[in-house]
Length: 271
Image 1: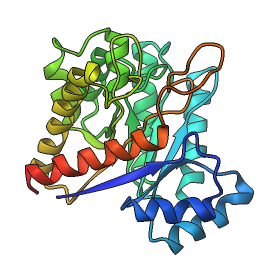
Image 2: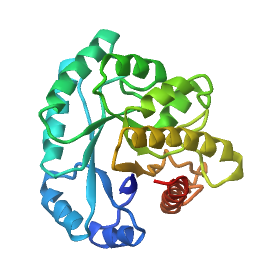
Image 3: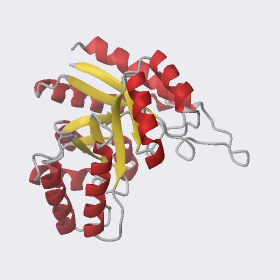
Image 4: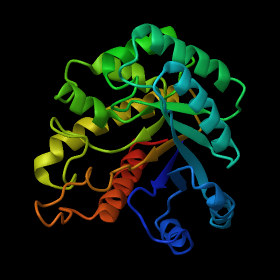
């Protein structure tokens, strides 16, 4: 199994024409990004091809009803498909959905996915259906064909702990994970101020244990590649100083540090 690391464009304002070569030099395999504005999509796709990048599309569902979210899911997935993504990462539904509404959403979404031809990974994200371990566990049990994008930093914040009592659920999620968002959360937030700082070592190590579970599960399933995005976010995910709003760490450096750390760890674990 090969580890493919993608670079997200969150918080970056540099033109793609100069940015993509820098990302290529850092040995990223591809780009993870929201759908560009319609007028920029052809340019975006051409630049991906020029630099040999694969693409993971980030999409979100919207609306005030389950029907709205299902319609928007179909629309954004169809739009994403026109850009030839390797996978689609989706923020799916809303946390206020009842159990019945959540089941309806995933039942219809999965039926639609079966005709799309591109793997869709539903993200474990705050504000969405899969915002906590227990709802996710029930959904996974009911829908064995559901694929996940695992961002455990959200669960750490929602649970206000390093998931000490939820290891079995994390392991179940790992069995269905086809993409990792390798951000590190802590008990009071979805992103530690700087994962390189010694005071956050236990948080980094906890997340790495969970990513190891994902890699082990993917190997058992015979997956040829594992995809990971070091998705540390811009302010206000990235902490800033009061009054000046100066970032406490450099986002570019943090993402690249995480990419190199996980590339090294994966290599050391063997393929």
